[in-house]
Image 1 (cartoon, rainbow, N blue to C red):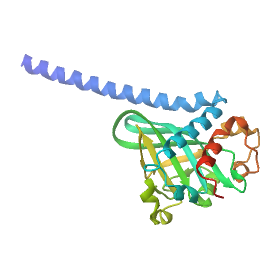
Image 2 (cartoon, rainbow, N blue to C red):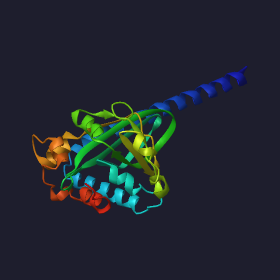
Image 3 (cartoon, rainbow, N blue to C red):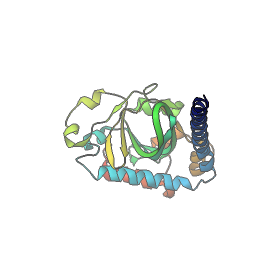
Image 4 (cartoon, helix red, strand yellow):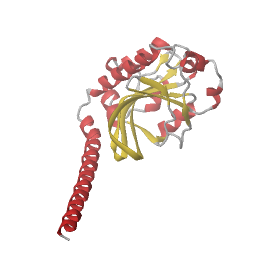
Length: 246
């Protein structure tokens, strides 16, 4: 009897310990993700870094023509958004948070960037954190117009599909019929088309004010009526290096 009682006690203690560990991990994960937006808002100089990182990520992808975004697909895009170093992580309940920029074609080339926030969640067996770059090609103005009105949900207000990759994929015309937005991801050096659904994207009003001042209109920025500030020139310059079709 004593042996059975001891065994049951040991099992109970292990069960409680595991439960406490799970709760602790969930609390720490939630706290860390919840703190990111507030931390960022106190460093307005980060907008320069955001534009530079987005430009760097985009250039890295386009340096591999056999595995990157086909040029004819890129040339057909009205707007391009890049979310560099987006963090995905969690324990059972996953969280995705990231900052990004988007520029659109104008009569004079690519527009000044509009700053964005990405957020989303998922449920399933997962643990830890991972950094991923996301690229979104807005193939027509309807997707970007929905974003300008309010935040959009990929797969909801805006249809999204995995973008084709490589030269051979670019020869196909199937992608033209798929969605308003073509999405890609790069993680641990691997780049591929990804059907990115259940993610919400919104305009980062704080970053917009820090770059363009009070009363800025994101629609005007993307139409090219605002000059491109020197500190955020990196991203539209990178886009111009690979696609200058108007």
